[in-house]
Image (cartoon, rainbow, N blue to C red; front, side, top):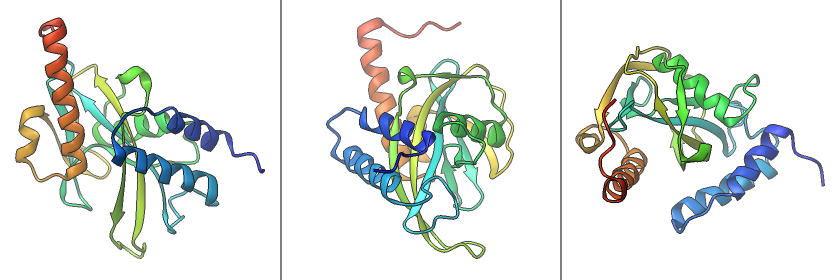
Length: 200
């Protein structure tokens, strides 16, 4: 069997380590592993069939009460920062960090969830500027920002901190709502176990 390139092998290993009872997430994991092992350029944005890996980030505010969302120019909705994996990105984490820096100007990010993969999603991207319709196999990280200061750039027409409980009122998508629901549930459980997080 041909040995996988290091970036692809490392991502395969991390996907295999994912645990949980969510059947949807398990299905996404299995499809991503298939893509990584059986297609020629799974990290390349020019691989249209069936698509390619992307990296994105759910970024919590310094007090963990709000999430950072951008108004995506191409898709016309509030989404988490993210995008394609570039050849110079050493890992999926590096790609996710770079996209956050490019789109909202944040460079100081603390990894949460022990630095593991927080969420997976596979979604259709419509044809655009000569690119055919294809799938994004999106690997999502969870970070805490060190500062509230952000500035829209790259694909972001606007950027804002949104209180977790208010995301449901925005034009977003079901995968963002799913992730926010998990964060809200986690926050409720943490408050019961440890009391409210102290304000610095």
